[in-house]
Length: 375
Image (cartoon, rainbow, N blue to C red; front, side, top):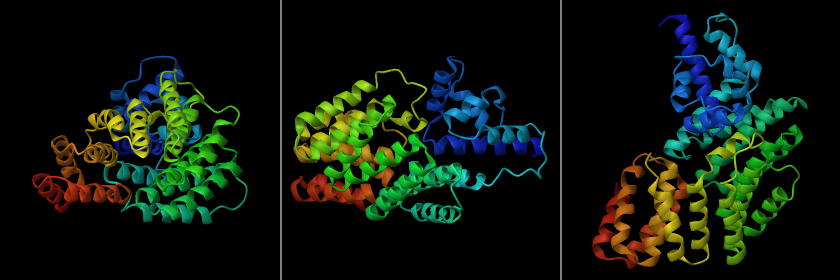
């Protein structure tokens, strides 16, 4: 492989890491670029060519910097290297390792879950936190972002107290950095942990803080309303819970604005349907929850962590309803995913659901459940 080809591939890998760090798929990044540029010329295939090092997106670098929340100077330097204009002596910079590490950790989590990479994320987080030397806002924001990633992975690994403590510290750093979008994101993550651990009062306090803030972008408010709906459902307030989730669903219909942070782009109708279904489960209404959970599970096809959670939620509703015949299909869909996904957070729920099948279900389904668990 010649030097220029290697440099182009290195640039593509760096761009892919930045995209994964922003939690965007290739189609979502293409759509975001189309919105901020006012054109419709960027496609997923073009993003793929950039990330494989087949092309260097020179004209798109300023917009990529905006969408991916990356320093333009860093992207321009990497692009110049990919074009062969800088020699190997020009290093990628002190942030390069962290960008790559975070991108890899998130990619692993999306495919396999957070159990086996949570400790690696914590190691990166603690190392970068020790490097803080003053009030450099860029450094504070970068470390806060690493803390957000570490907090999420700890949450997925069911290490909830450590996850919340990490996210709380990341929130402090984001606030000191003056990075409002990152601050909103970390607050959403803290509310997520609170919802999962059954602390609706604390989650509601956080969502109220976000929704009462000034200049909060539409899709950030949408995320807060989804957490608000889940919290209200846990508190038993059906009317307000469903109203909050309905407002969140309505927010999806609004056009995406430039002010919307990149991390809000993964929220789609499937995600809101899943939240609505989970809220109805919390309210003790699996029959009403089932159509929403089936909507989420129906689009699951990649076999990763998210699919695991969506399919399991559908299975849980069917088990609560005693719909044993219908429960067999999602149960079998889980079997191949369980071979590769390690998410303790989700497996705790799986064990509870399988115990319910073993206790209440017909013998043939209980046998299938045991085989799935053993596999």
